[in-house]
Image 1 (cartoon, rainbow, N blue to C red):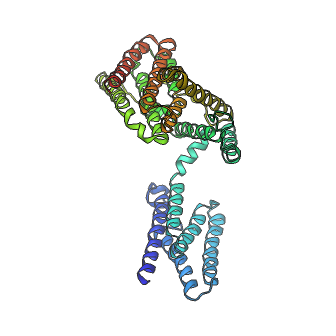
Image 2 (tube, rainbow, N blue to C red):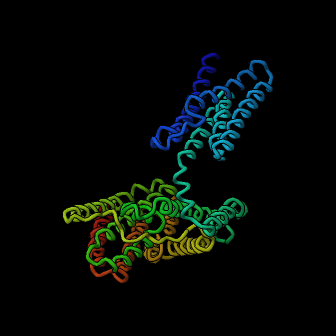
Image 3 (tube, rainbow, N blue to C red):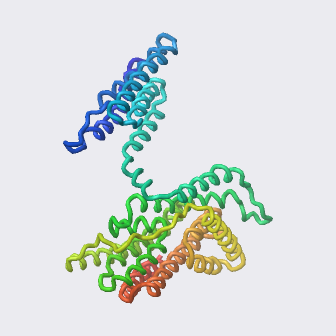
Length: 427
């Protein structure tokens, strides 16, 4: 019993020290000498606050009097209130972060002694992440407007209000259309795309080609290709950065496909990995070659001409359009599989790949899981969609990009497609 209590107090001290360390680094140690300010709430102060929270619960249990915790809590609250009033009226700093962090630390210590250690750890991690993310959250708010915020709120309402109300059973005689299942897929895919969009807003594609390709590829590799094609018409000689961004964005499309397959049918992942790895390795070799050649010519690969223009995917209109597209692909795929067999699935995969790979990937993964089609047919169909979608990007580069950009993209993507096709034939 004593050992358990000691471990609980040690947990309270450790968790409080983590928050206190962040506060001390933020307020004093990490700042330049001319900006250093000794603020309330370093590592020792927060450890004491956590200890007081634990003592409040411990004494309440020992004396069977819950007012002990309340009395200590009020004392801590008054101390924090005095500090806040002093800070507000003397230093003209009305920020509440330090005061609220102190109260949270006190409650974390209480949770540890109340045998809610896991919850205490979760709250500590969440609090520390929030404190550390100050620079990024402010950067995000500097780059979004009211329209994007309203789009997010509308989508959140549809996710948490409308989704639970949708039917969980099929509404058609053939059992193919399950509204709630369809909308879950839409929410998941739109959410991943939105993460890429938010990251691009925080960091910006101008951070370098790597960010332009990775962040843009999470949201839309086709959008990155279009943007780089347009920029290549302005810079006709030095096209390597634009080619790199396009190839990296396409690689992110490969990884997205693997992620969707792992999410809906893990057993199917292994059959997809060889061609995906082959195309990814080929892409990496091409990017490496371009980097080495540019360094030999003394060029900087971290300065794309302009920001990649991405629109928010977290809107009602695009979500509804994708829901209809996903429903259409699901129905056509099942009908084609029933009447035309594997050839029908491949045909639908080819058509779907002209516009999007996410919908056909989720559809075929689910059908293979439900034994509607074989895993071999599903993996082949997904790979066909990836290759067709990659070929579409080649067309975009050729039609809308500069001549040299188009030629380099054709050669690069031909090698990528060839590696995936050969690997598929050898399986």
